[in-house]
Image (cartoon, rainbow, N blue to C red; front, top):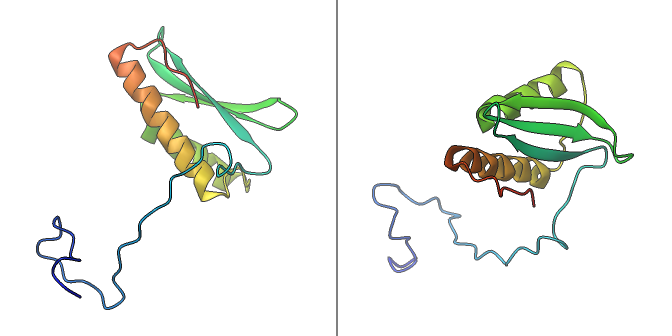
Length: 121
């Protein structure tokens, strides 16, 4: 490997023998997204109580549980602990887990900025 292939931000790390740079294809929000088979989430910002709410819903559009908290970490930790404690499998798809994290961060930023125009993608 030449030094040109070495990322400029890699300073004091050695590269593994199987090191490679993978160029990612653009993600299509509609074609590429995968939800889990048993549930989806609704995320809302409650400006009155300065909280983020996450509803876990089934595909009959019934809300099973609502988790609420001030920060994304509080909420996703509570969701995953509840899921594990109750032997549930709400979040299997890693894309769905990543989506939850992304949307919680957007909601946190909207809450901090007082942006009432937050919408869930």
